[in-house]
Length: 334
Image: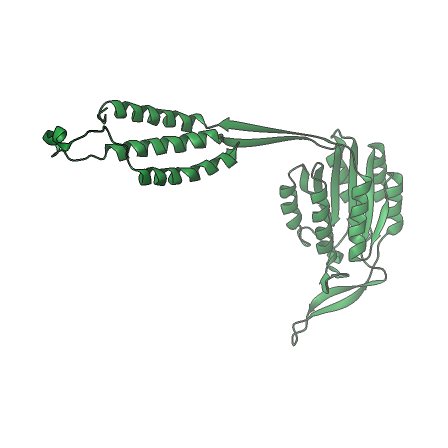
């Protein structure tokens, strides 16, 4: 419940003060007389509590009327957003080589998948009016999350991506790209984007990466490709030292097919990036965010269910009751 004029509720604080001042002043005399002899016959009549009861009704009525004046209401906010018209599918490599820990943030090593997850979370928050989806691929490809404006749902599915969910021994770049394209093929939007992240070469799948790129070109889908990993060799965790408990690494060569990734991007009017450092990874997504912006119209509707009748009606009823009792059952001498 909210109030249209919440500041009026401060008037409720005046009621205890008014009641205290009323008590200090006392009840006015019912009538003035010159001698007690005139009322000797009624001196044995005890005083009643009718006055206090009537004032209690009046204070309660005033409290209800003040609450009604503050305009209580149940608020149901409905926001209709005309999305910007940009649909984005992110295809993430889940092959075993994504375990390489060649990124470092604040002195802590991160593997390639965890680094990609972190920058993608930030990217999702910036694209609140866009539909985004997720595709994961290794030896096979699958849809991790459909296109959606529910970014909390998308983020939860992103967190569930783990290496080993599917066969991690090979990399089917063409299959991953084709699956992402299929999610965008039927949609009508101003701009269709695929962000493809991989750290290796395509050695699996029935569709060649450049064939998938031709399909994207025909469907006017722009593909941004990102080669993930440092240059030269990368530290791959192979276990832990039994004496110190520290991770043990083996240096493995980084084998990204940059030539194919560049051709995919060029053919679809996208761009190829190399993410070899943590800060560079974040810069890439910041640049893509700036490149793919469109104007959007946002309309907000707020529905209110007014509740003041539920307060003003009993308030007026109590005032009427106080008036009736004051002139009938609890009537005083004039």
